[in-house]
Image: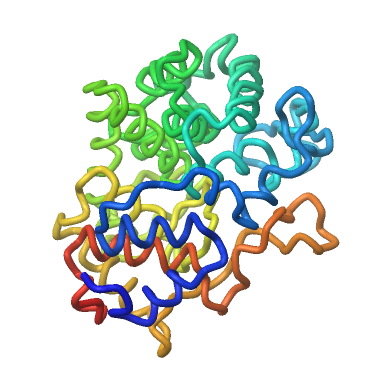
Length: 364
């Protein structure tokens, strides 16, 4: 595939972020290109993500709290407890966890000392949390537990060359133990138990895939594939119409209806949120993107291409670094909503290449 064959490719190759140029050549153009670690580390986004690191490895943040509610309520009178989150883990999208996920997405070299130090901090923090020390709440035989941190930690540990670390192995084993029969995970205590949570499952499946990729762990690979099958059964965003009413969803959508229109909107980073970009990237990574049940989502992704050949965020979960909403702001600007996004465009081209649809998008 020739360089300069498409405006989106040309645009990505002109990025001021070396990682984006490298990933475009490797993952979109299919070139056998070697990673230049020093160049990757010099990128403005990588530099910003590594800024403000403390002596203990965490990135600068403010102490925070997580309120635990009765069932799925969010009313003040239903608060049943408060977990205090240490500085460096708090800070929402600028936290140590999400910075590390962004760094490994930007091809940070495995074993890079600063990211390894941050990963060590994160692994210790996650394993010290109540759910890992005492186990999850079991309701009707199903563990009700939030696993986004464990899934993200598996991605981070596997990409940074730490998959053999006993802490990473422990998280992989925990995710396997906590997986629901339908292939996902769920933290809602009042969920009917018939279906796991799409948001909660996306990073767990990605983490198990990354762990299996570097370790050859067959159980982890099979678990990630079961999550992919869960999503594919729904053609990624359609209701099957067989849900059981619950307090969380008293009126399940009928068969064939879009479960949540927000899932059809592109955004990056998605963090722990489920949307078609995140799930199509998961399917591309684990080799299930050619399943016919992904076709509707692939068609929708292609239709979102702008007249200039690029892709943009429909909306974002984060706010810019200068935002007054400090608990939601990022340390980098990933591209404002409705403006061309390098990472979204890169992800879309990766997905289309894996699905053998690049020619349909005009990339020869």
